[in-house]
Image (cartoon, rainbow, N blue to C red; front, top):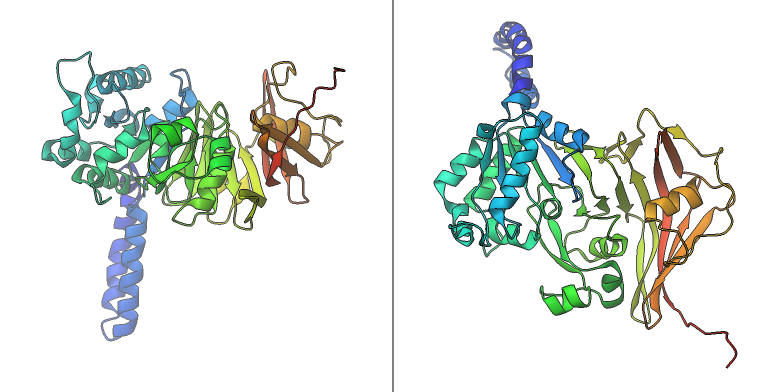
Length: 447
């Protein structure tokens, strides 16, 4: 691709000299062999890009130019060819047309955007029965269409439909899924939003809510009563493009901290990192260098359970010593070493906190405190001189609930980008516990 074109002059410049060195080593077999391996690995590493992932947390708006311009840039720019896989949607054709229109707004033409006909649901608004497209995961023509692309995009909907279409009954790759992996291996891009984000990890969250997961645990099979009704967590096999941990989407809007914690501890494959992606926000992952950056309007919650513990009290899980971080646009992370780099426009707030609030916000429609998790941590803990520890409680009608404890440590960092009408906080390494509680509500009115 473009990278290989750029290094070609370098390769051809050093190649004659390398051959001369190689020939002078004819009598030194071992040295010659070592030189051959090193030189070959150099060429391979220079040629291989490894590709990119764009994992969007759902609610991706057409006006989010930071994300869409990055999608197109990583996909090849003006020469990009995108294939859209609408398998997650209940109306596959409409899902395709909606995303095609957005890509065209950002400069691509119709011929650069292909419909990859893989789906499980019929679109009632069309004459064709799209539910038959599930067979196309084995179709050579569809695989050829995928192979011609520089980028593949998975639309939103139900992630279970995608895995049903692209994995065999034994959990192996269909020919279409292997063709998609080849796009990534060639240096292309694989992206998706909402359900298209959930499928990216090896272990996929198929459904459930935070309180349902904490109070009722794991469902062995996907059922509307257990997963949608009680909110039990359902884990299953994902497509495994993203190797670093478990991904969850709509993270801020749907309060999914609890279910991501449970997913990490209950995953059949051991992962220590969880990535909760906010709406209208994307995690950009460089496969070769194992780095991620943030684009969009929200942020990414990073959960680290490498030193955490799980115990049980009255059959309820107790989680201690987790670490929560929050990355916002401009921030980056070297995943292998967990080296966090705040955005260039962000100022360290530790030691010069702005707020001095001792009272925590309560919840409910009368409080006027419509805080997300990250608003709570940023304002009441990170940028607050008065408190080093905060907590929040959540409980249901019967009083069963959980207390979330959050604490600053010496290693905790906070950064603020103070932009007009949009303060962006990032923070790093806040200690976190999740403790089960029982709440009793008493009316103090005299009877």
